[in-house]
Image (cartoon, rainbow, N blue to C red):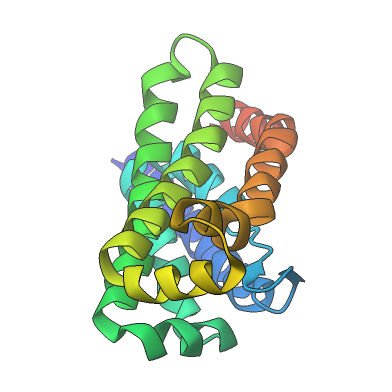
Length: 194
């Protein structure tokens, strides 16, 4: 009974630390810009770690925290001016599902190969995050995106990819993949301590 209680306490402590890290990265990441609206986001890294170490629900929690913190950033004002409900739904759903899916994918591959599990989770997180964001743009912000695209003389699809996704997605994906060995090392240290 004591071992289970100790493990729960360790897990809760780890989740609290990762929550704080996600909050800091989500807030300050908005200040670093790539081009017009795209911000550099490192929040998916601790989301992947939390999803792997604590499970898919922890990943969903961490993704949700990232979304909630977004609401107090300077970038939120632009999106709120377009649609408050659309912004809330898009931001929370993309974060929560990215963490949840990352955790589920990790769990799916963990027993076969932990390295593959981390890489797959590190890829799935930004893909889901960006995919839900694009879906939210089409569902909630299409008129605005259409106007922006027309002003640039390009299609809506091209505008979404070039201006809203572009380098941010590439940065998130590459950062997650490149840091996967470090994430795996953390997981291996954690497993040895258990």
